[in-house]
Length: 456
Ligand code: UD1
Ligand code: CA
Image (cartoon, rainbow, N blue to C red; front, side):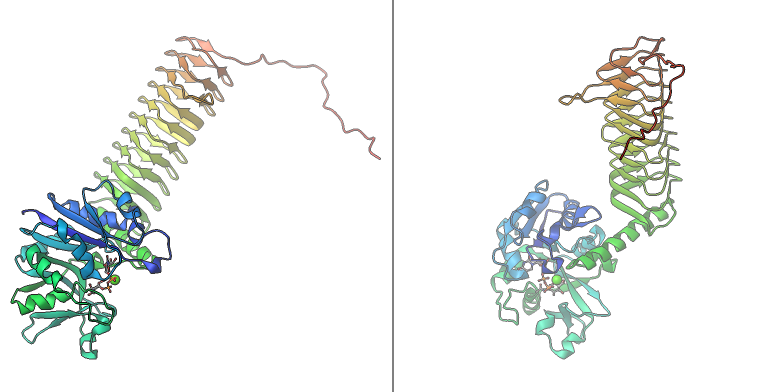
């Protein structure tokens, strides 16, 4: 395919969202509506993409600054035809223009590709609806050829009975589109410049008008209210869950899974209820994820078990690890194979080598932990002095007794043992027992104080 012009209309008010945020910046599956459309547009490769924005001002181009698109302001907003006119100066006449909508987020590449096959005509994406109320109707002649699109507000009773409706998405040869748009008039019930009026013009000129239907109705569903947003979110989550099931992932309940990004699963992965996956998550062969875990931008190796209620963000986890329940793994952490992280353990920006364990109630921050280390319950790395962060180094085969504070910067040498309840402020030598605590004493004959009886 040669280059394609894509115009995304995103200037509308979104009044029914009852929000100060522009409608197209509300999120579906963790991404703004407009971002879904841009991510689909990007898949066409080279070409020109224009986003027509208006309501909400610069917030829209600012939020989408990572895309190589032209942002054109439509002010005031005089209709869908007027919106496309604003983008014309950026479009290349030698290729086609595809019109998409920032509030129709789930349009799929496959459907758009079907529309491009019917070039060089004007191609409309249409759908048959049981209840066509509110949509522009596709009017055909007795031979079944498209004659025009008539908006609901301008339609006769007979036209309103038509169930084939305009989704708004269309493809046209750019030079023809430019010519048609220059002739638009706003003589209709809404005094708007309707993009849909180009269909009648094409028919008058004898340009073929084709129609294509989307593979799924949800691809062309628009978002106008929070209720529609929530409904489309569920449809999309159901669709993603279904795709995982088809690939062999075990889901305890496909209705209780949320994927807000890209989840890649190898074979024999099992996911319990209530889990949320964000960004890019990779689960290796045989990974099991326990109920109500939240996992973001993370890679998990073969046969690792994430127990329930674990929270994992930007972490690399090796094979055969056991994490949680109630573990919190924070950005910049790397766990090698066979590591165990238990309940109420927080790990931040730390590397933990193979077969090491921190099973209960610990904070491990800015640390390098060797292999076969045992970190006792309640161990805390004191990484922050109030101004700067410092590292803790724990070498291979160390045993840290329970309720120990390691005040960084500090290094615990290979094979060292730290006695329980110690506050370690300087390096502990290899292979030795180091401890810092007051000697235990007993005071013979000591009595507990008694309540005085001198109150009035
Ligand atoms: C439009 C179509 C209608 C179709 C329906 C599908 C026209 C005249 N009608 O009607 O045939 O069935 O969509 O939902 O095209 N927009 C702008 N600038 C404007 C006006 C609109 O950017 O000046 C954007 C809106 O943000 C929205 C989209 O275009 O994303 C559609 O606008 P809307 O006013 O909702 O059109 P409808 O009346 O629903
Ligand atoms: Ca609409």
